[in-house]
Amino acid sequence: MDSMKRCLMLAQVLIGSAASASHRCVFMHGLGMPNSSAPTEIDTDDYWGGDSNIIRLTPFCSSRTYIHQDTLTRAWDNVELQHAVCEAALGEGSNDTVIRNTVFFAHSMGNLIFADALRQKACSLDASSHFVSISAPWYGSKASQVLEESCSNSSLGEAFHWLANKLHRCDPDRPGKVFHAYESLHPAYPPFEGLAEFAAEQVSFAMCGHSPYGLTSVYSAAMEGLARAIGFGEKSDGMVALSSCLLPGKAYDTHWQSEFYSAGINHVDGTLRSGDGSLGLPSRQPSKWVSSLFTRHSETVLV
Image (cartoon, rainbow, N blue to C red; front, side, top):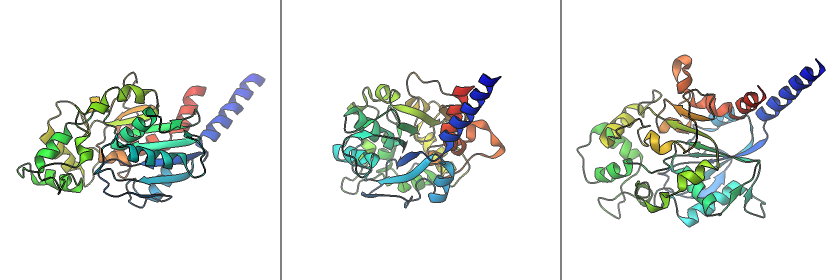
């Protein structure tokens, strides 16, 4: 009986500590941001749904740092870009390249930037840090080809072009071409070789979407239109095919309690700005997945 009480007390301590604000959290956006500026402590672009949203979803964060880098004119393997991301992840006062006691969140192309920075040894994660991957195109995306075609073809539909314009895809200095960031998402882009396998060793938690419509929002119809125009031939989040997002060797599940989560959301929903799906369906709870990452992990281990 005494041993059982000790185990229960240990469980309560571990679960409580996992849910407490014990990690520094860093957030890296995806492609399409046109400018670079210093990291901020607030979500100035509302990329992640704004401060109140993220603070509510990340009770395990003792601080929050938002990265702001040009992910439009630079490819994801750009050395300057990768070093800027590592510098933000390391934080002020760091005297080496090891990221400690940090949860690094990345969305979309942000995953490629950070994973390749780790692969190139621009920085590294120690055992106290975690890489949370959301909506990553580990093997590229067919969307890059269709978006380039849209720069010279206006017959793809109103909803599609509304979204395409939101993505700032066409390079005005190169008529008919997309910006370099989009070009680097082509599945045949050489640096993709071996990246997913490397990332599988670095990522602690991952979420992929498999519904172009996703959670009902202003982006739903446009994401469906984009998916139809691309013609993935498989499940996708509207921008990335599900098979491109899934890390090799990881077991994904459609319940939000999974460390590796295949969710009924679209690519934009991965920014967490759309909240959770109605009716409490376990496959449509991206925000709940994030907010319970560490509590859920501790509870699962202790059972």
